[in-house]
Image (tube, rainbow, N blue to C red; front, side, top):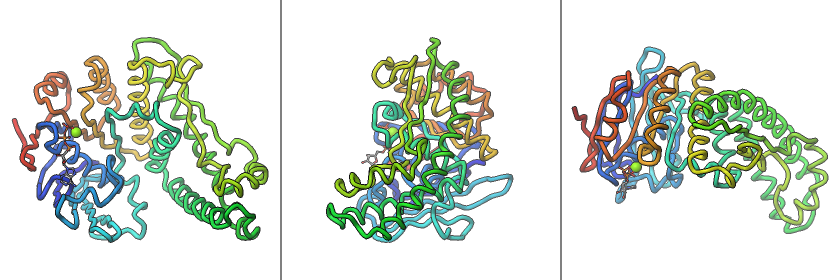
Length: 366
Ligand SMILES: Nc1ncnc2c1ncn2[C@@H]1O[C@H](COP(=O)(O)OP(=O)(O)OP(=O)(O)O)[C@@H](O)[C@H]1O
Ligand SMILES: [Mg+2]
């Protein structure tokens, strides 16, 4: 699976561009602020139906315009397919696959698996539990449609339950109505918990292998899953009813899950060096790549945004080496410094194609 052609209209800084990609390694160069990240964000959009960097849809429309359009042609399993994404301010966005609208946009997710690596990845370690939940949910949702459906449903009912608690203003809401939200949260919560738990078990093995390959030292790394789902959710919900009413929100459930990142028994956030933290997140991304490759039976697209600036030479070479060994598919690399990219990838066995972004357009360079 790979993207062959991309055409943008009024997406971010691009008025109109047309580009043909290589199925192998695409190196996007150009000055800071020229639009390299915006270009690969369009690919992220096509795969995951949203921007990786800006979730406010309107801000992805070119200044002064009212709508954007992303058109693309993909090769999937030997045949050509069209994926088109459009958004007009004030209207719902649409994703079309071979000319057909999806009933629900979420049905598209997983069809074009993708892994994004950015310099912000260490926020996964330093930030709150929601970032880590989003990361693991992102993998599970791309790998497993029923998980995605359960999660969407869970979040929908959770919002309804919270709205009811809020409306009740600190008093007990109608018991039957509350129960009609609580029961499915327990049921769905249980199955989401089991999916996350089972997923982590196989993910951890891959993750530990990659960490060992990337890091020079021999720290023991671990990811510990903490979830209310590990206990009896029914009685947890009963016990927290008073608290829920007083705080006007749902204080129990798998929406509070955390994944703790641990190195030699301690929180890597507090005790890990910068290098160890970089290795940790890179190993997370490589394990994501391996997991999705297997689940979707095709190597995911890899977007490496601006990582050459932040990673040392050794880690970059190791990363490329591992990806090649894993049967990588199509790759996109952005870097303001063309010469550095050429030098770092000189030993790569896969064909390299270079592009330059300037004046809101993009062209191939030799
Ligand atoms: N909605 C928009 N309309 C017009 N221009 C936009 C919009 N959103 C972002 N931009 C412009 O896009 C440019 C940034 O593009 P991008 O982040 O892709 O640059 P880059 O080439 O990746 O730069 P760097 O090398 O610094 O990472 C900025 O000049 C910004 O003003
Ligand atoms: Mg950039």
